Length: 269
Image (cartoon, rainbow, N blue to C red; front, top):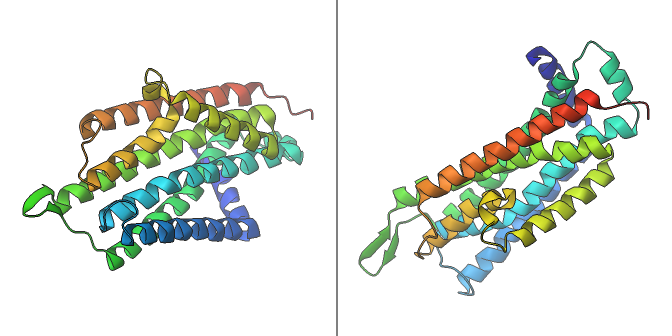
């Protein structure tokens, strides 16, 4: 299956390189990140929110950028899979000596790799700008050290890594509606509604630890609180276990559900 997956990945890479939509999407997302950064930077400099440190500014901007990034992941999966069905090319693709599972893995991994470019670019832009303008220093209250710079760096790296794992889980799970609906527009609509429902469900404390939206938002939200010197809702060890385990469960559930669908999917339409 790995050889087939690599073939699909290669095809996706060539298609992305030739597509103007790829560049347009990247430019649009960079513009969104820069707008978020400018908004938070002005608010911090004028003491409207937070504190003027590079750690707080980076965490706040990246936390705000998670939702647009998750939407980018939805778009990538929706168009990568949906256009194969809507254009009718899926019949030709599956008629080749290519297993359906290999095709699915290539599509999911292609979207993950594509999304990672957006993720890394956002990290580089935000951290570079915040470092040059505010710097990354230890959090002090007069002569009292609250958090050292090293501790803040490790917490930021951990929060970003946990967020990335949750994004991969989201991309994997979106393949389920993409295969069921077989239309980019329908997949996007269903995913947006599902995201809204998850946000509402997060209001119930009993459900919150099991929601994918929690794993997307909680790590960076905790880092933002830490960077301001506020009490953290839970220890990093506990949050790490919850987010990793929860993201892994959602990822595996999405993968096996998608495999079940793709193995039984009719392509008559």
